[in-house]
Amino acid sequence: MDAHRPSLDPAVAEVRLAVRRALAAVPSGSTVLVALSGGADSLALTAATAFEAAKLGLAVASITVDHGLQPDSSEVAETAAQTATSLGIAAVVARVNVGEDGGPEGAARAVRYRAIREAVADAGATAVLVGHTLDDQAETVLLGLARGSGGASLQGMAAAGPLPAEAPGEAAAASRGRAGTALDGVLLLRPLLEVRRVTTRAACVAEGLEPWDDPHNVDPRFTRVRVRETVLPVLEAELGPGIAEALARTAAQLREDAEAFDEMIEETIEDIVEHAEAGISVSVAALAANPAALRHRIIRHVVAAEFGESLTRVQTLEVARLVTDWSGQGPIDLSACRVRRVAGRLEFTSRHAHPTTL
Image (cartoon, rainbow, N blue to C red; front, top):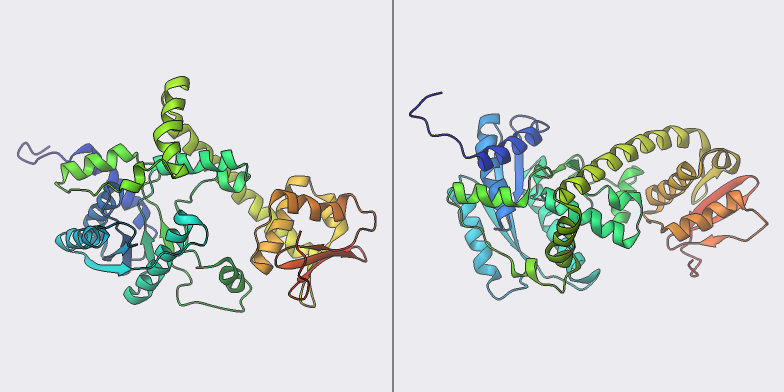
């Protein structure tokens, strides 16, 4: 080692390595967009992306979304953009109006991703990088466990996947080939899912970057904050260290299982699903021959892919009863479709004319 060459700070090195691995999926010559809030996670991510992208022949732009939820939000957004510019990154500030649908967190997330999608289109980006860390993953898994929302939520966040559509219906339409978008194929990358939050803060300190601390991140009105500030520390204290890492590992393992199930479902669906007027139909005998876990996944997959609706477990089990506990019962009305058993098949059809829902 060159004795005159300063050693790279371990936290900076860890963040850069994570980003380098994520960017390996992006073709050389592309543009990537970094979502920069000004917090330690996104700031460390932005600095590492600027460094690694230059070596890989990638252009980098950043977007900072000003939600307007705090008195100094405009100043915070401008400061973040200036930091990006100082790192050699083209910076954009998007000011949005947060509605009320889905609660404060859900509404803010919806307009944030809408702004990101617009910035992707403007920049011609092929990938978006966001700063979710291992701690965020652990919190997500705990929240999913508390809500009892099934294996899908316990998988947490994917390290890489498609940039989500603005609405489930848009995604479903695109999957059926009836509607496309200029953003098809854009990746959403989370390089820091194996990096702790304390590491991103240490990386900012080492690089002389001053992160902004969002007061909402310590506001106990938000469930995620209570998980972060109270639940996880109690678990660590009572059960020993490593809880966050264990939850993140659990998410990764469940995601692997889900991917295997998805492959099985795709293969099975090709054999048992047929197109029907205003919808599709599925063989009852084939559904009955499959284990319950696979049968339920097929039902959820069919409804989500064809009609853009996510079924609860209660709804899924009620539909499955048309297969496993058939006694001549009538059709089941869900939010987006009607399900009925006809001549040995389950028919899923649009229910625009049927106002009653399950």
